[in-house]
Image (cartoon, rainbow, N blue to C red; front, side, top):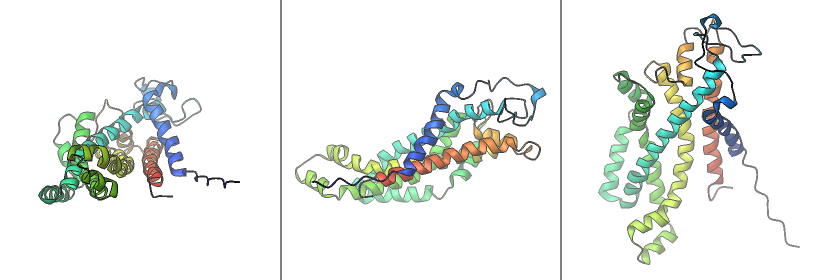
Length: 275
């Protein structure tokens, strides 16, 4: 009898990431399936009421149902992270691939610019730019975070391209006379994109927490936008009086960041060459 093929171990990080991020994504897409309360239906008579059976998250300072605000804030936080990751990944795809494949002067120029730009922390850069921005909506915050968060993505894509172009199948395709554009599109990119996808998954958690930090500091998103960062900002002056204002958005923020980190770990474990 032929031996049975070895069963692949369960990818626990990926499984947990799917559960966490799947639940949060469902909240972002259909928040009414998780709460029937309107986050804009507020009454000052309910201000700072603690959690109860009917309202498990309690109420905020303005008498708004806190569970509804937390659930509806999921969309903004996830959408912001997805938009910044998409923008930086597109930039990394173009600049990182060009630098990694071309080498020489192009690679040296991209490397030096990346090194200089990466010396500016995302939070510091965001504080400077957003503090002088009159309107701080989702678009403005996405643009500012994209401006300061692209260097790590470009580095990952550049290094992946450099490794991939030296592989045997790429060398063979080059020897057969395959054109540069087709060589990059058909042979280099499919392999080089895997490390970028792994890094981007975990990096999304950094961006979610960065938005919360900037908003907590008073230079991020502004009302009427709804996000966990705005909830944390409003909770800082009432945390002793109503600790639930800090606990629930904080737990959602931790769950989102943890889900992104676990997704990156799970994808890394599924990468070729890992067992």
